Image 1 (cartoon, rainbow, N blue to C red):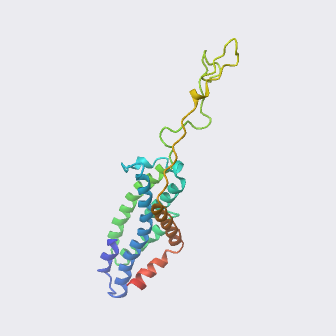
Image 2 (image 1 turned 180 degrees about the vertical axis):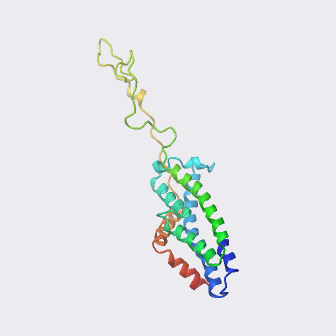
Image 3 (image 1 turned 135 degrees about the horizontal axis):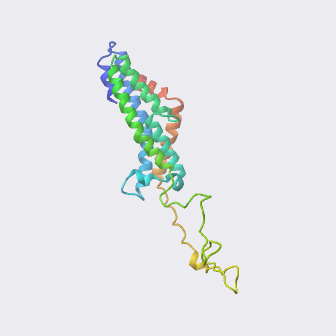
Length: 220
C-alpha cells in the first residue's frame, strides 16, 4: 500500500503521474478489501468451533465444509497473487509498475522479497485445508483386522463354535456407533459475507483493470 505513495513523490509528472501512483494504492486497497472480507468471514466461521484460532484448526476443512474450504482457498490464492486469483496478481503488478515507473527499482526488489515470503504462509494455510483430518479412518485398501485363533476370519464378535460354525454375530447394541453430531448452522451474516466476497473476487479477477480505472479516474 505504501509503495505507490512513495513512488508518487519521485514521479516527474506531478499531476497525472502522482494521481496514477496514488490510484494504484487505492485500487490495491479495494481489491484486497474484497478478498480479505471473505477470508476473515471464513476464519470467523471456523472460530465458532475452534476458538483457539490456530492454522491446525483448518485441517480437513474441505471434508467438513467443502464450500467454505474452496472459498478460503480462492481468497488465499488471491492474496498470494496466484491463479485463479488474478485480482491479487494484478494488484501486485500495479504496485510493482508504480515503483519501476518512478525509478525505484530497489523498492520493487524489496517488495518482491516480501511477496516470496508471503507465499510460504499463504500456500501452507491453503494446503492444510485439504489434508485429511487427524484421526481419520484408514484409506480404502488398508489391511483389515488380523485373523487370530479366536477370530479366524479377522472379524471381532463372530467367534466360531460347534453350534454355530460360522460364528455368532455380536449384538447390534455392542457394535453400533453413536451418530455424528449435526453441523452447526452458519449465520446468515457470515454466509452473505463469504458469498459476496467470492462473487467480487471472481468478477474482479475477470476484469481487474476496472478497479484501477475507477480508483485513478473517478476517485482521484
